[in-house]
Length: 227
Image 1: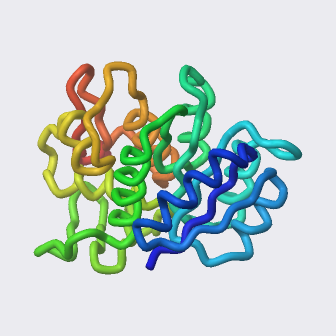
Image 2: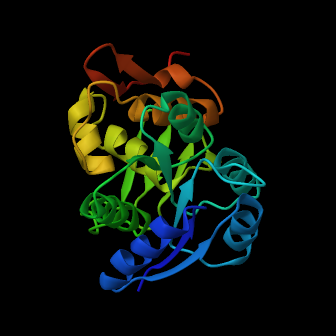
C-alpha cells in the first residue's frame, strides 16, 4: 500500500484528491502550507509526494529544494498552474520527477502516480541486471548507477532516463520513446521535461558530460567519452 503526502493549500481540492486516492487503496496525508509540508516530508516515510507550487509560508520550490538538499530522493510530482512553464522547469531542475498542470482530470493524476510508484520500485525486473557502457555502470536490481567509478546521486526518474540510454549502447533513443518508457506519457510539443532531466544527469557526472549527446530535434544517445 503506497503512502502518499499531499501538500496543497486548496482544502476543497485536497478533500477531493483524498477521496480519489483512497479509492485506489493508497494511504494519503495532507498538509496545507510549505513549512508543515517540508517537516512532514522530512520526517515521514513516503512513497510519493504531491507538491503544489503556490503555498503559504514557504512555496513549493523552496520545499523541494530543501528536501533534495537533505538527501531525500522520494519521488515528487509537482502540481502547477497551467502556463507556469518557468516554475515547471525550475522544479525539474531542483529534482522534481514530473509535473501535472492544474486543472487536471483525476484519472490523469492516478496515471501519473502509478507511473512514478512503478518507477520508484523498479518496475518489472529486467532480464539484464548489470549494464556497463561508456564509463557507466548501471545496477538495475539495486537501482544504483556510477560513472567512472563514482556513484551518482539520481532521482528515480533520472535513473530510469540513464538506464534507457545505456541500455541502447550508443544508439539514438528518441524523445518520444524515452517519454513513454520513463514518464509513461506522450511527449507534448513544448514539454521540456526530458531536456531538464538530461541536464541534471550531466551536471552530476564527474567528467565528460558530453558523453550524453543530444541529437537535435530527435533525442539522445550515450557515446564513449573522448580522452
